[in-house]
Amino acid sequence: EAQVTQNPRYLITVTGKKLTVTCSQNMNHEYMSWYRQDPGLGLRQIYYSMNVEVTDKGDVPEGYKVSRKEKRNFPLILESPSPNQTSLYFCASSFLAGGKETQYFGPGTRLLVL
Amino acid sequence: ELKVEQNPLFLSMQEGKNYTIYCNYSTTSDRLYWYRQDPGKSLESLFVLLSNGAVKQEGRLMASLDTKARLSTLHITAAVHDLSATYFCAVDATSGSRLTFGEGTQLTVNP
Figure 1: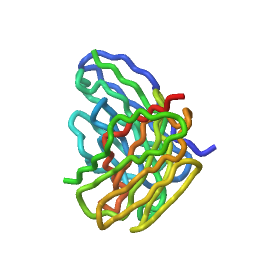
Figure 2: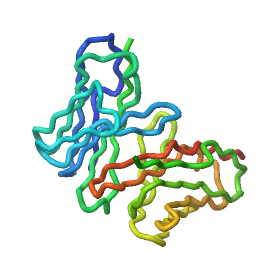
Figure 3: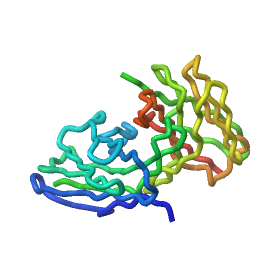
């Protein structure tokens, strides 16, 4: 089954404790992206990756890091989480075909930073 | 900076009625996407619109794109309760699959 998976789905942590949210896709997509969703703000892009070892900042990259060592995986790293990073996070992937295909979204990771 | 605006942001309608959600965007683009999100769930793709004048229909939903007006519409025909959800439009103006989302329209269909 074609899918994007994220782990963990729910996470409560404390300020400053490093964490990683994993994202994996099984569709051989080149493009992967991380979004955060906050009430009233829609979805905002954090980072994206056009292919292995190619990543770039989105609209709200501060406080986040990513890596793309393998095509299927795109982890999101919060080196020192703060309460303003409490949010719902989505990973997404797609083929890079001039945008002719939609992006497929993972199930989401709900993060609470105390 | 690309801005994407949806209206209305909240829509309460009765079953059987028709309505339209509007999505305006601020820069040139010929790629627009509509997604649906149920409460507590992820985003589900509804439509991909790739050219001026594109129209797509699925069940009671129909989406269209006017690139000259920088406007997309999502029309709901004879609404049913199962259509209750939040609908997002998203625009790609970068040729690189980088999406900018609207704020979302929360639709409630009442029996």
